[in-house]
Length: 164
Image 1 (cartoon, rainbow, N blue to C red):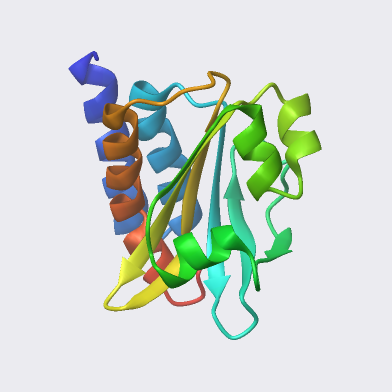
Image 2: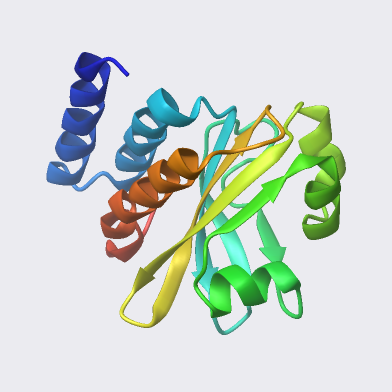
């Protein structure tokens, strides 16, 4: 990985947070993670624990996945794993996408075959998720580590008053 684009991406994250612009920070985090993950879609969701629902705050593809879209996760294996147990979810291949995501048809239409969902946690509370979807059917341990770091970088955006 070339250090110059990474440095520029880190500076963009820093400037966005200094300007209290959570949306710009999420966009910069997406760019930072892209240097490692080469993902095609990044979304960031806020978690409403009372409703057991996620609401999309950011999308790298707003035509397919517009901000403001939401998904109920009550009673789902994914919701239990990511939102309640606060564990990273890795879905590899079309079968995993179909099993865990109601919108698997839209995901397939975009040519996406793997996903890493990272819970963003503060204390014992899941505040939301950072989600990376890739066109390749498998992800590496290095991919998961890079996604987890991106999730940590998103914490201030999800804690910000009047979240994006």
